[in-house]
Length: 498
Image: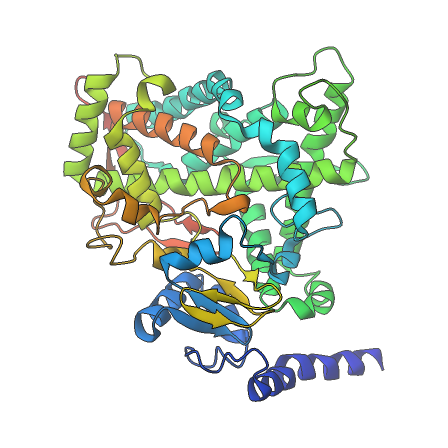
């Protein structure tokens, strides 16, 4: 009887309820155009995400249908710069949509906390962790990890073998952020792979690939969250799916490293400079009293966001620089003039270089590490968003990929042109440029990401020439939630005179 009841409930929720909602049109969304059957069912979005091209489907829909497009029965995508402030800006008071429940566990972390007070408390707790002064003190850790990355590049050059830079840049971010968070590198660069230790709650330790575990977990959580009312059922139905098992593996990676770090906290050799120490005590040395579940939740999201998006950003920038020799030459000229002969330039010598920063910003614009619109719920009373009134309770989002190609803000938006950040209309571009989101829920770790990007890009560009193994190579984008780059295999040789 239970199985029959669940089957009937599934049919009603998936097929009949959207038809009733569409017919009654309680939120007055039928006035907005939608691609295909998107206005009737979330299955349109789910199908596009399963193809890893959701962002492109949304982009094409906006090109054909305009700024306000219905992409699900109760979800409006709005590709207008004004919508950024209307939805995500300070004082907008749009809460996170139930989509965030797709990957949420028993304990919420800062990224999936939907209650405003809870999010504010978590952000206040971690604000000092990601302050610029704190990040500046991390330079020795970042530089040491850059040195290990360069050693692997040199090894490939000396052996005249190719190197998968997408993988090694991801190994770099895993190593650097595990060092920052736990005070201990996971050693991916040294080994040349991402096989790391995981641990079950009963103490069984095993090895598992970090990148695949994270990617598979994120993908299924993204898909299931698109039909949030079904989560109590779908989480059970898909509990034996390989992607859900990958999620358990990722959780066990975090559990293993958290338990090890807690054990170290009880010894005299415990670090007082890593991020984890700041989850245990505040800047006055007073215990914060976070339980194990809360520590695991925050560690999970930090290792996710701190490794995946920065790896994508680094890969995309290296790809674009070596696809555009003129830009590479100009950047090298700036670096050669502004830095000495050290292999790894200091952040101070790089932080004010306009063209280096322009190359990074243009890469974040053209190939954003996250392309999907972040869903929010219209507050009671409804709101006018980009000139059109939207009823309360409607889910809305701004499509990152599409807005970063806004032809009004960015002339020839499909071109990689760092000079636009030097000579262009910066005020107009700033209205549409939000690679780390905006407002009170903007990415708290963006300062660390910029720090890593500037140092790594400068060190690689100054010292090495790369060539794509595959002629006419085009870097694939595989969108799960983040827009992950595909594999990028390259020949490498030391730059003449470096």
